[in-house]
Image (cartoon, rainbow, N blue to C red; front, side):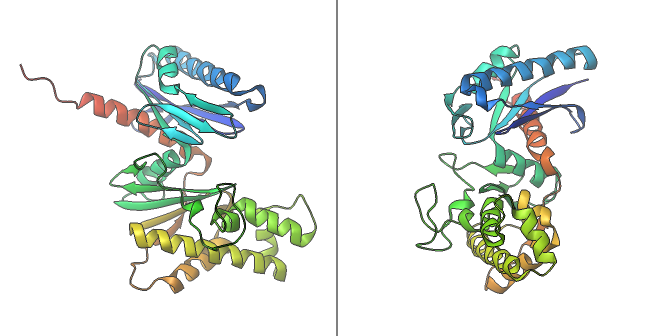
Length: 315
């Protein structure tokens, strides 16, 4: 059965699949990233994992994978297949596409940024399916986005497109590790909400999910913290939709797991802020933690489609 390898590399774990031409996940696997062993061992682990997936395909599906797609965090040079930098993995300028192609018998390999790759899957086969323009926003430890245009995701001229978490929504506010003050992710990420709630309730172990539960029970401090996050998020999203005019706005990540505790006030807050802008449909992400892996599979199949449709030289 013809298939591709899909790998989603995270800071703590890797998710992988063998993906059929129809998008079916023919085999799924997980393993620890092992970042505590250092960047060289992380890269070795990725190569070993990919080789094991290739061997599984040969044994159980009757042939080697036709291509591979890999999603990684940090700064990614997708055009050249270089994992430029990832703070949580410690690597710099890793020629991951070349290394993987060498380990996998020379098959085509696509490398993608983790959030943009997950956004590709959400836009094409998930919550944004059928939308010609979408914006995917992941509310996790930080906040990042993916700009979808006609079935693809825009990386930008230098690979930084979609970094909505670093829109300044509170000028002169909380310092951000990026060097600015008042960035969106310092107010509306799952990490920021969890940090604020832990301080308010006096429990250093409390997180954003605990804050959401306290909101539903009517705790006034939780309601205040939550509304501040929603207001900051709405300010950032209205800036983004003013620039991009998406048809669908897809919200994922840990904070989105609060469901309507987030989406009802967020939709209202965005609606109050728009003037001439067209209000997009605001929907929760649909693919959960499989988005990155499914997106990596799409990258691999796209690579094959591009190769197979390259015009032949005239005779």
